[in-house]
Length: 235
Ligand SMILES: NC(=O)c1ccc[n+]([C@@H]2O[C@H](COP(=O)([O-])OP(=O)(O)OC[C@H]3O[C@@H](n4cnc5c(N)ncnc54)[C@H](OP(=O)(O)O)[C@@H]3O)[C@@H](O)[C@H]2O)c1
Image (cartoon, rainbow, N blue to C red):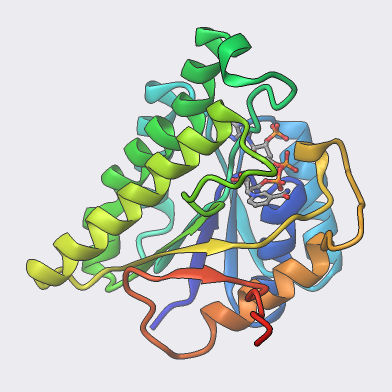
């Protein structure tokens, strides 16, 4: 079976790390990006790391016409796609409490992290069904942490997690040969958090490597929420 992956938001951050390490483990990579220059820079870096990059697809998740065009392009150019990684995402305004969160921020964050991500996933299900493929979502847990709870981001990711759970049940009930699961990389130093590097933060190389190991483990992960760094409870 072909090993072709489409990683959204692959021009930098975790998506770049995932594209790089899936590529180094034998996957052919199609990168999703919304700017040609940024896409080209990433492609050059990936190629010099030995990755077989098939090309890039222009994808702006706030824009349904862009999503439609991207899906058309994937179907035409990469009909053997077997893995979609829903990685692209935005943080929303993490500096305010819910009372001071702007509606426009809630809308934009949901638009990218949930509505656009859902629209892309929905439109690629027929191709992934044909190819008995997989959908991996890069996300955070739905449970609300007392220490960190930016409303726009947390709500958008909870919706994305609900999408995964619902689809997994439906695929199982309808015998649709597609696997869908979610992956939490844990705190990772990227632009999304202003390149925060506190103790406990990971780097995109390690996260990309662990993500690739998970994808290549040969196991069925239907409906799972996977912690890349499992929390070890002490007795
Ligand atoms: N960093 C963490 O600690 C952490 C932890 C858990 C989960 N995550 C999740 O990991 C994923 C990647 O985040 P990251 O930390 O790597 O962030 P990042 O470095 O800011 O990268 C985000 C990627 O998403 C793309 N993107 C943003 N808005 C988009 C839009 N409207 N349409 C299409 N693409 C868009 C960006 O493209 P541009 O370069 O064009 O903006 C970029 O490629 C996100 O889903 C995030 O929620 C991150």
